[in-house]
Amino acid sequence: SAAMSSTSGELNALATTTSVDFYRRLFRREASEKQQIWMSRLLTVLWGALAIGFALSASLFDNLIEMVNLLGSLFYGTILGIFVVAFFIKWIKASAVFWSAIIAELCVLAIHFGRQMDLPFFRIFDVEYLWYNVIGCVLVVVLAVLFQAFRISRDPGQP
Image: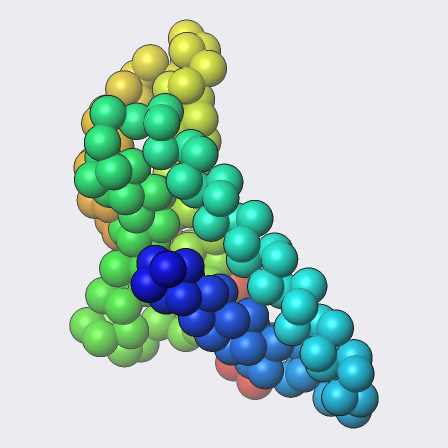
């Protein structure tokens, strides 16, 4: 009973946050109360389905720590690269970082899914998933420096 109550609270908090931060702010500023309640219920179902999917996919891994590390490794390196550029390389503009992050994330995903498909080309990238963090971070930093140095990506108002 306590677990169900806790889960219910978590799902409702996720749905409310998503509804307020995304639905009302980005899509329907003037949504009626009835529309907001309907969207909140729909989001609760979607978050519940996502949680069930996550729980069912746990059986594909040896343990939950491995699963969490893999999912985190797919995205954390790119996020770390964005922060490294923001804190330490101040002369790089936003669009250079944005495009470098997109490309770095696509590269990390290509390496991961390429390994899963066992294609000959991707065998050169046969690295364990914990290295995805390093690869993503380094790619973001290097690509952002290159994009900004060669001004491949221009911010509005940039000469």
